Length: 238
Image 1: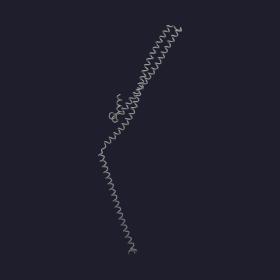
Image 2: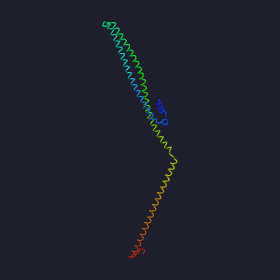
Image 3: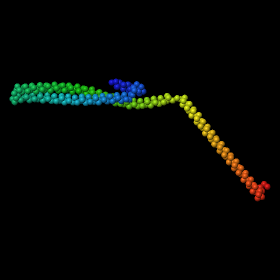
Image 4: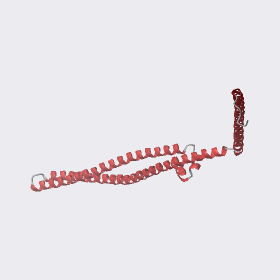
């Protein structure tokens, strides 16, 4: 009864309360159900044995009644034979009396067997009621176990999440984000600086190339002027 009492407490309380009170409510409930199933097996065996005894008692009642009726018929037959002269009257009376004694004995046995049969049937009715109630209880607790497992699973998951949330330090998180932001700003500025340097390098190269190109053009112009002068070709302005 102790295990049933503890199981009842589980069913009537919240899942987290049960977890706090019991080391392992699921294993305890499973063990309780196994115990009830063992009790059910024993009850079914006892019920079968009671039914077997009731069947034997019923057969005994029929057997003893049949024997009682046979002895009565034999007593009647003995008296008829004595009446017809086929049997000595004194002998017939003696044997008929013995037959009636056997009849009475069998009637007593029949009455006893009938009483046993009625007791067995009453016990069978009570036992059958207990078996049905036990089956119903087992079914109920199996359903309760499914619910308990689901609630424990949800409770554990919720507890884990809440624990993780409780361990989060908002100050450290904000500080970490600020440091990350500062590092990103620094990296972006550094990237921009490298870009400016690269642009400056390209500008210098372009200026050098442009200057060299202009110098080359001047030299060619002077060479062309000298050639024209040698050929006596004068400028249009002249």
